[in-house]
Amino acid sequence: MLAEWRSDARICADVAPIATANYLGGERGPRERRCLLQSRGPLVLHMLRGMIGNDRFAAATKRYLDAANMGPATTADFARAVSETVGGDMSWFFDQWIRGTGVPQVSVEQHVDRLPDGKFRLWGAVRQAPGPEFKKLIVPLVLDVGGKTEVRAVFQEEPETTFDFPLPERPRSVKVDPSENNIATYK
Image (cartoon, rainbow, N blue to C red; front, side, top):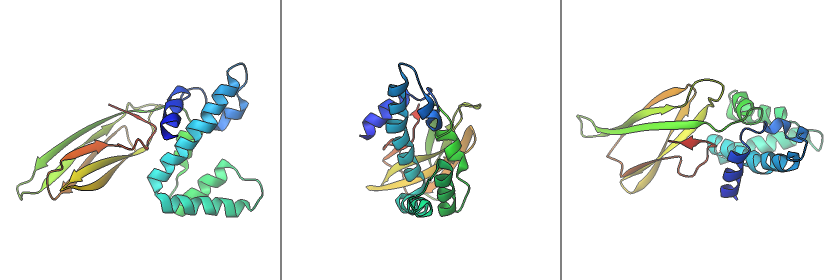
């Protein structure tokens, strides 16, 4: 299902925001609405879950549903429930992914250096073009260190964000968002 959502999400990335999907008309309206609501929408929720974690996503969803209590509920209500659950303003996420369009082009530069004390560091930069297409992302870096999987996350809130992580040993591999949790194209 995720592979299908990813494929469709790129197809309808610039058609319209998810928030306006029900206003699409014309010959292509039903197909574009389906793409936005049944492919891009679930993928956006999947991305949010990946960003805030399963437990907080479940807690935010429960808070949202409990507040609605069988009454009307809006995207703004869900955004509020998410923000309250994570303890910070998450309106940027909903502005970008529900009220915005596009798929960001993300470049990740990474290096591993040995430090004088024999340990290592993973450093580099995550880049997107500045302007209206820029989207804040949490970019997961998945490392194989000593046969164990470790994850480091880079919160990209500017067009260029640098990172520097200490490591106990040289990683066998470093993969950028290997589960493709983000709606992004990596270069």
